[in-house]
Image (cartoon, rainbow over all chains, first blue to last red; front, side, top):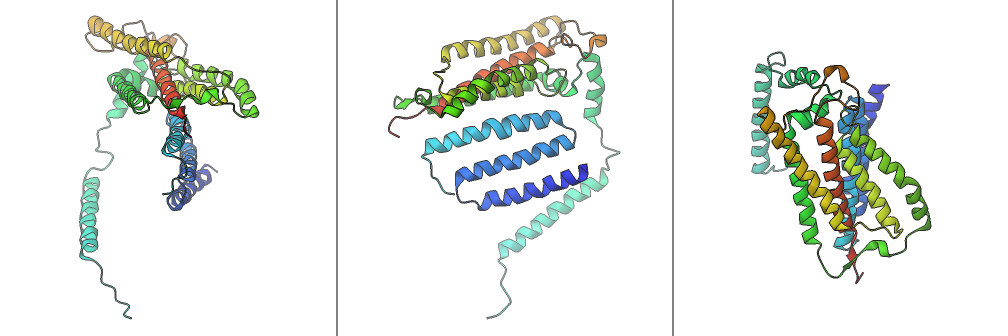
Length: 81
Length: 236
């Protein structure tokens, strides 16, 4: 069961990362990178590193994505990569 | 149309160089099998029990590598200072003066106390369970972000937050210097730490105190960063 969770997280990290690269809108890219961080949290918990998982959830997903979105708003909104 | 394609010389040489590199790394790894590698981390984790702290990660981050944590806080302070300098503009006004969604206002009133209590728990119990000062401070800053974007007339006073931040930074260095005077090592554990009290809230000597100080400093810095980033141009 744990192996299945780890395998699905690995596969979804790779798929979301590919989607993040080919996504044209920058704001969508930031939200997709939050998905990569979420799967990384599942992997950290599965590999018994709860401290790293909490740090990734709070800093990697939460505050840094919000700061990136606010910076994108300062740049003027509809940027395309 | 010929199927034979000409491969550029740079691609071939790149592949060659990477193959040599990978073979070298594999050669080094084969010679030093894991049984021969000296495990420095295990020696440190054996020392962990002598400090009476249940969470070994906290011991490593705050005690064995306490000076690195001081440097990380300094880096965060410089980042906060840079964002403050970059966004200083008279044309910017605060977003909290505008009206926001009704659902967001009610949800922020409901959720923000829970977020603050959770952040304080993570901060204070950092030496017993997962988390610690960094994570707790950022959780508190995200609660302040929720209050700021919900515009219940909430604004943080920069002077008040700066006093908090300065006191936390100064007390970190002062605790380190007291350890230097008493025990001849910077950030020495000069308070009593009994191994029999491992797992209690008051255990581990100065380690929980330092993690709470780190939490206050990180929380105030992240709040200032978020408040500076939320300001927007009047022209928009």
